[in-house]
Structures are given as structure tokens and as C-alpha cells.
Image 1 (cartoon, rainbow, N blue to C red):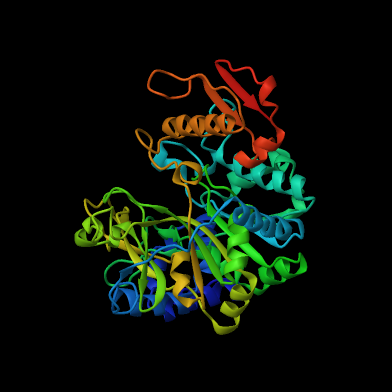
Image 2 (cartoon, rainbow, N blue to C red):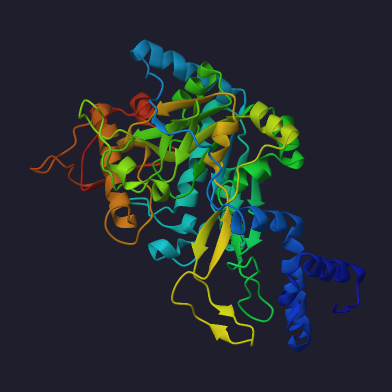
Length: 474
């Protein structure tokens, strides 16, 4: 075994050998001091005991999701408010919880923007139709608007990754946290795990570099159930945590109606869903399996499930799409910590360059390894009660996830402008229309002016509204 100067480094090297991963040090003597330090720093990230367990279960054992053998059945969301009075009552419940500072916000922001043609974090993608504000700013301003309206200080957790952490923190600091108190913003770096080949061996991309990948958005749940974060939430008086993903600029963060529904349902977890209308829409679906609500990812849906129609012919049988908007009670997070509850890991195929046994760099033509990841929705079956509520797709879901076409930055900006025009029309403003009915002009309403149509109605003087080619309210 390699001998090194410090005891700490020697322990790391010993752990690699004990886990039968000593090949990661095969070129140690060829590395300079800087490269050796880099390799040791990566080894320090790895929990080799956990890695051995994952290899034994997922690579050499069964690689499927441990969802049980029960056949999935469709699930329907709970009934929406029956009338304006019930809606107002639920909103009031949510507003009271917000004003008491009982809601924290967690934003998953570990993805790079490469899939939408952007260098750097996905959260830097500009989506404001007029302002060109990036995703990070729109979400942070929603939290700032909550603070202003409810005279509170909402804890805001931003889950980054090794690839996005530095740029994300720099962006927030350079923009003075978008008026948020810096003490209320916590950056949580998502853990990474090594990629392994079909034999369970860690993949090396160079003599000093291990192929590493974030552990999936289930990492947010694992971070939140760490005692340090639980204590932080308790100290702030938080009772529920709102979770969302950065690439959906339509998300209504800590929507008072959704918060009120969650509290009314008295469940450990609540989730928003949208009605899936096309079989090939790339969203997972909520199902009931063995009496529990779960999610089946789009990639894991069989053709039969994707295409299945309801008996009455009115739409898809599995039609409740997961939009990654959840509320989790602090009691559930604390119980998960006590009982060691966690989302299970599963495999995802990857194609990455690697060093062969002779030290040659190989660019594979097909998938050559797997990464371990876990999903936050896989904790739903662990909850005592999960409540599902349907959202208005046009109001709450249009993610940015492609460089061109639907869900591209350009199309998302167009959809956002139409959404704001609908808010203005609802508030009594006269919106000029094209022959086809689309609003003429470009519209944008900052969250700092109004977070939803209801708040806009309270603030807008429709009689004084003068339409034009563009309108920006802040």
C-alpha cells in the first residue's frame, strides 16, 4: 500500500484499498503534489462503506427501484375548494402560517445549464420576458416578497452541486442576495458519489480524477434530515418545508392556498400535480401502489401505462403529472432522522471518458458506467399520509429544459408574458389582442409587485392602466 506523510491521508488510502478500490491510486507515483492533493480531496468525499453497500445492492444485486410488487393504480388528487369562500378560508390558513414564519423554502439548484445551451448553473438562465431576470433572481424575489407581505424572514435553502456551488454563491453575493437578509440564505452543497463500471469499480477519468456525480434531488431530503439543519429549522420556528426545482419559473413558492391545503389535510407530505394530457410528455406520474402514493418516472413508465386511457375515454388513465412542488412537515423530517428513513438509491447509465488498465484515455461509444442517485419523491411511501392537490398548469408549470422549441427559454418567456397578461385582464385591465386571441405586446410583473393574480387585483388601478407594446410592473 502507498505510504504518505500524514496520518489522515494514510487513512483515506487505506479505506480505498479496504473497499477493493485500490486501482484509483495506480498512478500515484506519476502525479505531482497538486494532483495527489486533488485525488486525496476526492477520496475524502467518498463514504466507502456506503459505496460498498450500493455496489452490492444495485450493481451486483438488483438494480431496479425497490417499490414493491403491488400493481400501480391511478390516483386522484383531493377535491379542490368548492367555492370562493372555501378557497379564501384555505388561503387564510396558509397566510397565517407564513406570517408566523412557519414555512421554509428549499430550492434544488444543482443542475448545470448545458442542456439548455447555457454555460454555468441552470439558475442563471434569463427568463424574465422584459427584464431578462434569471431564474435565481425570480425565485429569490418571490421569497423576498413573502417577507415583505407577511412581515417575516423566511429561511431560504439553496441546494447546489460541486459544479454550481461557487458560481451560485458568487451570483447571490454580487446581487446582495436580492434584498434577502444574508443570514436567512443557506447554501447546501449536494453530496457526490463516484461512478462505477459494471464490475463495481470506480471509474477514473485521468490518473488523478475520479468520475463523480451528484446524488440526485433526493439529496435535498438527506441534507434536511441532518441534525445541523433540523436544529436550524427548529430554532427559526419552522414547521413545514416547501421544496421546488430551479428550472420552473412558474412555481408559486409557498403559495398560501397550497400551504393552507397542506395544513388542512394534516399529512406529513403534500404535493402539487398537473393533469397530463399527452402520453409522451416527459413527466413522471403519481400512482397508488400497495395503498401508498408513489411516483413512477417517465423513463420507467411502460408503453402500456403511458398510452392507457380511462374507462370513460376522457383522457389518460395515469394522468397526474409530478411537477416537483412539495411540502414536507418538520415532524416527518425529524421522524425520518430518528428512524433512518431515506429515499432508496437506484442506477442511471452514463457514458464518460475513462482510463483503461494501460492508462490510455478511452472515449466510449455507448454507456460504460452507472451513477447512483435518489429522488425526493421516493420518500412519499415512507410518509404516514401524502396529500395530492391539482394545480393549474398554465399558472404553475412551464419548466426550462431544452435549448429550442417547447420549454426553451424563448418559449417560456412567451408563456410567462401570456400568464401576466391574463393576470392583468383578471384585474380589469384592457389587454389588446391579436386576431387569434393572443395578447399583443410583452408583459412582466415582478414578484416584488405581485406574486399572483389575487395580489395584483388588490394593487392594480385598472382604470389608470394604459396598454402599450410592453409593460413591466415592479
